[in-house]
Image (cartoon, rainbow, N blue to C red):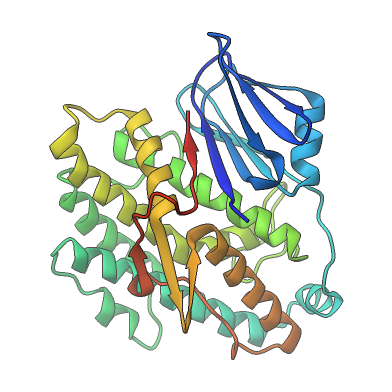
Length: 314
């Protein structure tokens, strides 16, 4: 089956459903259609986009997720299916919060995050110490993050700091948007595989928070960071100035083209998220990490086949 991430950035677009298809009607009265069963996520990239109630209900029934943004392209919320329990053993073991297991699992996840950060800086041909810092008996995530962002932003030609909220500069806004898109796909996968997004491995539960999503997002952040660096490379050749719609388009292309190798199998990026979460489920069932599979930039490549899985930008 072909899966799509549909990015909508045209104000005044109205989304409805008709005979099993999503119908996007634009302000100039043109329409585009897509099978509902093919849609994995809709990114409402700007305010002024409308949905019929039936459209929202049918998307949720098909396990799609909607990411809502404001007029500055800042993600502000999700529309998603209800939590569900698929494998009771995983669900119950997640509830037990086995500290030893959680510590080992988090250590694995964090190591892949460090490896992906090292890969990015090496790809950018920037000298760094992430590999050495991460091999210390008690590696400091904060120190490694500081080291990474200092090198990374300089590689982009910027003397800025990492801003998580209320970002002012293009680089941080672009990163936050990209993380939110990947986060929405991850959130969807956690729900359909029956884990509780509100109960984390490392991050603590707070009011209205989803710590498991943030835990599992850590190694995936590197993909967005690499995409942004590639965008800046492309930007120098094709664009006179940074434009957020150009970034949205490039991010969609990157999600479409990115593939990950897993032993003898190749996964599209969106499918790789499901494989990743499913391996987390198996880890919770068996309380070990033997079958754990975490997406790695070392195992990624670009597929430029025009007939491959497509995400869409409007």
